[in-house]
Length: 323
Image (cartoon, rainbow, N blue to C red):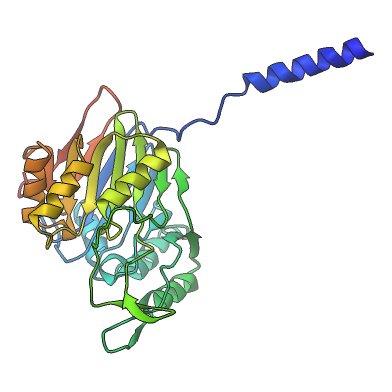
């Protein structure tokens, strides 16, 4: 009996040893990020806002929805992009230049597919009441959330990083280790001592793991791109930065801040800078990072970042005006 028990224990131990250790997040094989809203427009309509379609190995999601109700909808039509098969929407933070198209897009697409844009991913704190300098309350996101739920949409709030698809992570709120004040100073939140400047604590990004390094997609980067890069490394364990895409809120920053940012982003291979990054800031970062007009570009509506798998290369398709 004892011999049989030992044999069974040995078999069980062999099975346990055969189970692989906890693996790193699965790496994406193909990545395409297409700009659907920003100020510069090669095709369609430009606006102060941001949105992008993310396609990773057949999974599609919409990241932010622009400012005006119909801009992303019209730009997608102009670019020949059908959003009806997209079920997941990510809203990076509670500013209306990233949330303005949500309801119009949901209603238009659900007429084709009831599940279109039916799952909304946000970070904890996004619905917190904001105040202006006069103390007037702003509850725009609470109203937006109510309208979205009324369409049958589901809101998923993330307090920490969450995997949305193989190799694709929603960062959740980002720790502010680096002192980057990349947010407006005229919006406030209430704390125990009274109103304080809103740090946009819910600001979140997408992190995409690839065999060539990490792709980061930001809406405004209010958490600070240095902090976001740290969070991305913590998520996928990869210190290499393949690409940063989206808004970095650096347009008003002095050269010293841009220099410090470039130090943290050292080794970055591609920058498709949109929205609030700023044209001058993009050019300064291009030089500081040793990039060129092919690898560091001001995004336009329709511009894309594409990665086709290790060995197949990566690149920015800037369009005519930014190329």
